[in-house]
Every structure is written in C-alpha cells, then in structure tokens.
Length: 444
Image: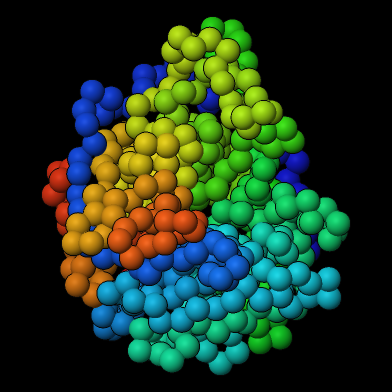
C-alpha cells in the first residue's frame, strides 16, 4: 500500500524561529581546529574512474571486535565503496541496474544502517541506499565478519519496488527522485527509511519489509516542507534556486530514542520534526543559514544567485553557511549528546545540543596532517560514539571535495572521505565523550 499525506508545513514555527535570536556566541569566534591524517583513496568522477563521485558515508560497528568495523560510502554512478578502520578499500560495488522491469543503472546517493532486520531464518544488519536513477531504495546485507569478510556487502533488493516520489518511469527520468536518506527504528522489528526528494521540499517515509526472502518497502507517506518564508519585515523570502528547482533537503538523521528527525534544507537551515510524518507535531526551524532572508535573483548567464541589495543583512544565524548538508547524531547518556551538520559553504561543521532547544555550541574545521588534506565542501557525514579500530573515543567520517594532495590528479574531479577522532573534536570544543550510549540496539 502506498499513500500520500496531504500535508504542507504551516508557517507558525517559522515566524517564531525568525523572531528568536540567532544561535549562540559562535558568531564572534573562529571555529575550533582539529586534524586528521587518515583518508580514503581518491575517487574520480570520469570514465577512467568509473564516474565515481563520493557523497555520503555510514559507519557499521562490529558488535564484538571493533577493529572489524567498516565504513560504507556512496559514489553516485560509481556505486558503493567499503573501507576498513584504516581507510583502506575492501570492496567496490558498481551501481548496477535495479531489479525491476523498467530498470536503469543505479546512482547511489545516500546510505544509512538498519540493525536487526528480519530475513527468513536470521536477523541481519543492512546498508540502505537511495537510488536516484530508479527513485527507490536498494538494500545490502552486511556480512557479520565485517572487515574480514571477502565481500562485506551483498545486495538483497526485492524486485519491482514502488517509485518513492514519481508515478511512472517517464517522470523518474526527470530526476526529481530519491535523494537524502536516514533510518528510523522506533521499536524492535520495525524499520523505516526517511527519504528526501531532489529538487523539491518533499520528505517521505517507507516501511522496510521482507518480500520473498529479500527486502523491499511499503506504506509510503509524504510531507511537503516550506519553500517560501515570511519575514519579520513583512516580506516573503523565496530562496534563490535555478529555474524549476525548489529549496531541497538532503542531509537527514533520526534520533532513535525520541523519533525526532533532523533535516537540513540546503539553502534554508536545520529543521527538527517529530516522526511519524503527520503526527501533529509542528516542525521547527532550529537554525538558519547566514544569508537567510536576503533576497537574491538568479543570473542565467553565470548560473549564480546575486543579492538584490548587496548591503542587505537578512535574518540568518551564525553557524551555517549554505549549503547546509550532512547531518548525524552523537549520542550521550539519556537525551544528551550532539547534532552535527556540515556547513559546506565555509568548510566547517556546526555542533548543536541534542537535548532541549538544540542550542548551538559552535563549529570546527578539519585540517589535514601527515599527507592528508583539509576537509573541504563536506557533503555527507557520519559519526559514532562507539570505539572503532584505533578510534577509542568514537569516529567522525566526512566527505571531502575536492580531494587534493601530491598523489591526486588535480586535472580530474577527485573526492574521498576523511576519518576524524571524536576525542580530538571533543577536546578542541570542550565537548563530552561517551562510548556506551547509542542508537545500535545490539548494545542495549
């Protein structure tokens, strides 16, 4: 069964957020600086490189031996890559055609982990992937041997799954399709994917189910988020986009303890809303990009947006520079911990409290060391508070674009992923470390 919620987010919480002061004291301080010397091999977005462009990572923690944990990343038309805790490649999976009658080769955009999913005779951990060219989900069972497995991932996608956002293949080919993705597991045996749509403001949820020994989904619900915003000066702000495109959302993460969804609207800011969609809880815009409310016009020649008034101040916050991209949660005891967001426009990462009003705590940037380069243009990110490999206080993995360095062909479009110690981040920003709480039901 597939159905749509006829729901559009109201503007009351938006007005309230605009009248509230911008987040925190970070505006007057420089971002904290941490370093990394661990990064994955470069991916190249050209024919010789298999059209591989890195985008989004997920961290799978081995339940018994943390050194067997793995990092799974999307490479768009280049498929998936699997890395060990030393950032070495273990597996490269091509973006194959989806198992459907009207199939097309895949384009894998975002990835997240579902734990303890039922298949006949067993429970498995699964990497769930959004496939843009087929507007659907793809499912890959994770071998419990993790980094020591010959093939850590095996696809188990059921045939002929419903399109998530489009009525037919013709509209799928327009590419307003499955984009950002996060997993929500509200109780044992129940798994949902939260998916955003490229080029629109729509968010969907779909329940993951077993179908004939493989995995598919049903019960698709959709919610439309705002694309225009009332301002305190009485005007209405329409974020500037190229023609035919609305201010899309991509980075999403679900707090598994509370069912709160955090969603980054790239040219708007960070939202918080309660799952399930349409539950009656009003979404809240908890932070705004720095140029929120500045009226721009699109220049078709330069394909850029320019402010109508170069001296306009707007109503922005001070932690996020568009695009607001990847989102994930670092869990602490109870409701404590942190929400992390990629501030792509200034190559930093914003940090918010997980509890209460999600107060902004500041931001940090990552500098390269020991041959690794700085993290720039971060799109997707993933964080775990669990000890993994040599990262005994937790790990942040971030997309990096462009990838640079002496071993990188700078004539080609290169991307990769960097590993950053959570202990280093916590020390630089006076944050806490907790290696026991979390979203993984295998650890209780």
